Image 1 (spheres, rainbow, N blue to C red):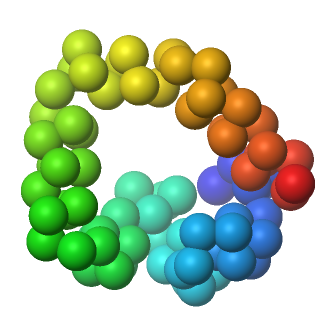
Image 2 (cartoon, one colour):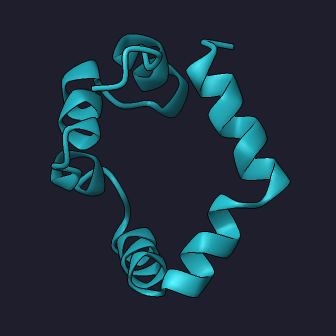
Length: 74
């Protein structure tokens, strides 16, 4: 697990518990997925299966700012 990520702070920020965050970071996102609505799960699954859309989203300034804030605990 990336030591820069604080599961407790991240969990508080996104409304999830630290154990589910740790599981997702270690490659098992199912616990976090279960907290989503069926519509949000479907949308996220579609995004994750579309490499071009996923890469575009992950390279956006907004997502990079959010990742930076989460990594820095702000």
